[in-house]
Image (tube, rainbow, N blue to C red):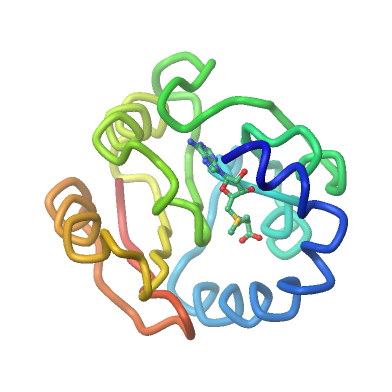
Length: 157
Ligand SMILES: C[S@@+](CC[C@H](N)C(=O)[O-])C[C@H]1O[C@@H](n2cnc3c(N)ncnc32)[C@H](O)[C@@H]1O
């Protein structure tokens, strides 16, 4: 998957920046991030540009990360190189359908402090939509919001 995103990184913002910003406008009505925020599956770091708070942008695609600014860490959601309780908020925008969701949720629960604000969006057309939706709802105290091509799950870790 990192190879695929490495290849499309050059054109990614041209294709998706506006759409992702519209999703963030919806999310920002309900999600008030606190520093330090984890952006999981950050891609070209659109979230840190939007929220403008101290953020660690994590993605396995070095090329996607190279297009963005701020603090970037090349890593996968299933194996996060951070100590327990490092983060006070988390966002994961249109990326969770790529993860091993069980492992990623375990890692999120480890590195994000309990009761921190979180926002996760899931692509409506994901073939694993129902399965991933259930895992998110079972793992976090979140409500669902329509978010264009995604459903947003917003609440607390
Ligand atoms: C559709 S893009 C979304 C990027 C960004 N969140 C945005 O909204 O523009 C999906 C991102 O998930 C990343 N990704 C894929 N597998 C991942 C994994 N196992 N852990 C973390 N990120 C992953 C990809 O490299 C890609 O940057």
